Amino acid sequence: MTRDAERRFWRNVPRARPSQAVVPGPGQESVWDYPRPPLLQPDGRLVRVEFAGVVVAETRRALRVLETS
Image 1 (cartoon, rainbow, N blue to C red):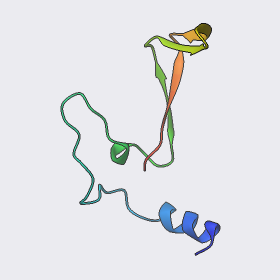
Image 2: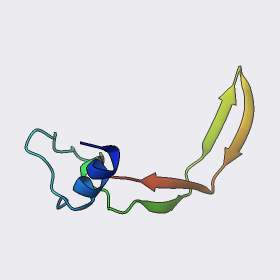
Image 3: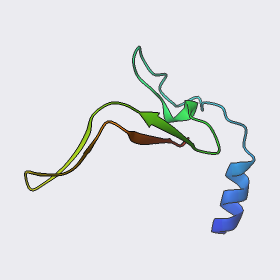
């Protein structure tokens, strides 16, 4: 199957958690529950990016990309 054919196939598959997917516990999320198309969601938690012990970015205005499996 070509890459384009794969994309068309997955785009048309109903969003359902497959039987082998683990059901998330309390306080957990599952990529199987995320929307299609993907969603950008503001997140006010502290996000800090460090490289070699140096903080190169820090924000409380991050965006989460919620993309299903």
